[in-house]
Structures are given as structure tokens and as C-alpha cells.
Image (cartoon, rainbow, N blue to C red):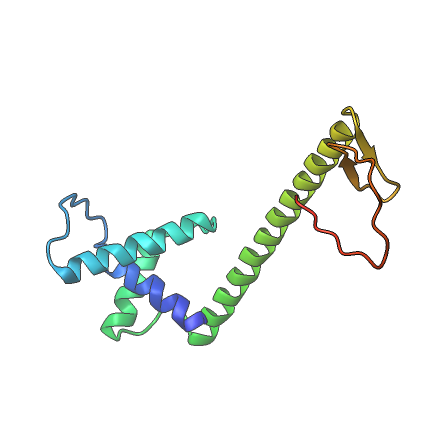
Length: 150
């Protein structure tokens, strides 16, 4: 997983020359793929709120692809990427917890308002219902089959 993440990041940024500001569209298939990978990696990093030093990302790509001695050991890289993954996971868990809390508050507010509407019955369990059209006919028993339309 970590190696794949590093590979995707590396491939994505391979197409970005350091400090280049060329705005021409990629022409060859290789250039288009390279640019697309770079955009994909950048969007993923941005969406996950990961702040990177682009110069060092490019340096890491170049060092790894050219076979030069890496500035960090594999152990340091794996440890760093593992810590990053834990940080991202923790952040996502906090965001989900906040979203769940907001949704719970909105749901409770809806039920409170809905319970005040004419004809809405709230049971002790919190279940709410409204009889749209009351019937005077025979009531079903345990032995009967009923069909409900929601």
C-alpha cells in the first residue's frame, strides 16, 4: 500500500519539471498520461488536505527514477508515510464524527417540528406517523396478510 502510494505520487509528479510554467497542452500520449497522473495526484493530496513541498516531491521522484542515493532510508520513508496515513485517517474520522453530529441535530430538529404538525402521532419510541385516511372497516389480525404502501 505504501509503496503503491509512493509510486502513484512519484509518477504523477514526474511530468512536472521543477519551476516550469509551461501552459501548453500535452501533445503526445505519454505527455497526456503524465500530466493526467500529476493532476490526479495533486487533486488527491488537496482533497485529503495534505500539504507538500513540491520541490522535494520532484526531487524524490528524480532521485528514485534516476537511481540516485535517496535522501531518506526506506525505513524512514515507510515510517513517515505510515504516520501520514494515520494522520489522514484521524482527520477523516473527526470530519465524519462532526458530520454525524450535525446530521443527528438536523434529524432531531426535523422530528421535533414534524411532531407538531396536525395529525402527526409520536409514539414513546419516537416513531412518528400520520393517518392520511382513516378507515372504518374490519381491522387486520395476526392471521391476516396486509399490504402497506409507503
